[in-house]
Length: 442
Image (cartoon, rainbow, N blue to C red; front, side, top):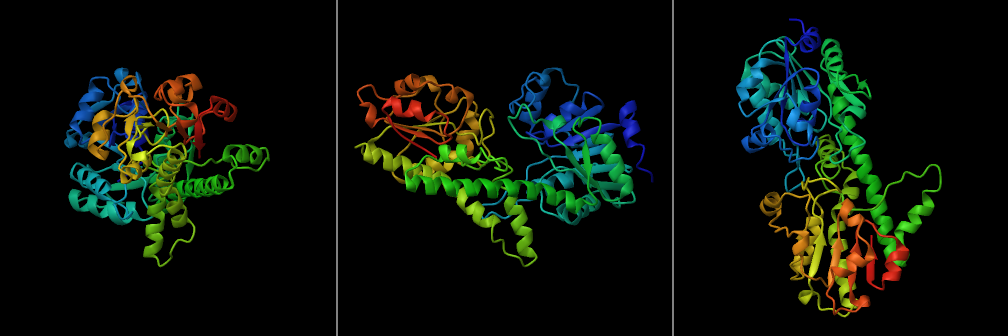
């Protein structure tokens, strides 16, 4: 059976492409491909599918484009039988013990297998450790479909590189890693992705290499940020400003430009565990990656402890203080709350019997309550505070003047007893000093 006519079939309109999983990754891919070919967008979440059909983009990744897209959104898995090129983009989180949670990718494999037709190429984009696509997904699809991989259908892998909330580095402007189980599938997969990837595709020799690219690139970022978080802790103990130290360091041409911060989300805070897990299975215990994860996973508690210390030094009784946390998403200007490390700040404060008030207009109120037990309060309804923790660098928080920030505190509170915790170093040092407020920043 030949697989080298799928691209031509898509371009001519005789064949269809399908997306399995319509979250922050899958939905933008579906919308972009739909500008050129016929696309079926499948997700098991009927509420999400109905929102897309109604022109509502809860992910905020494509915005108004959702209203005009020709993607055929569906929650009916049998529609996958119409497609000859299927892309799987489902989440790959970790369990509470940090081991890979492959249930979504296994479930997607089962769904694909049950609706697979001969002559189809299936490409996984979900982040996994090397070996998952061929050793776990392929057997499931073969069992459910009764079709032999390499004979009746073929497999490939192209790791997603979408950066949620980023309007500069988007799907089409990021180079795409592509791979296939053999030369024929690799060539066809490259041709299909070249339809939408303006930055070009980068073929690698095999699927395991492509899987490794993704977990390694995110592990590298995690380690670099962990180093910066250690630097921030050391600078804090030395009573010098981390931001000024980094500004000086970055004047050198070979500085990498990383900054300290809370490392959450569905990629950098998760992918390193996929890499270290497979390493453990091979008998190698990570010396650097896991220690980097340990540092980054501890930063929420470190910020909360710093806030407690500042409140005590300001003469407050922390248990009686009104603490406001601004932001709960895992990054700025993005509604994604998955694996948010701001929650670690909140939970640490609760250990001190402090129930902080949280506000974030970007985040979904229902998701915050369901996933974290956090009630989000509209910014306009916030009570006056004793301590404010600006945890996320949303543009509206970044744009706030010192005067506006001061208005959020209790009026009767002297300036030197108003505690401001600037996690992202959003505000200039000269402004912070001239405000008279008691401040701390990571």
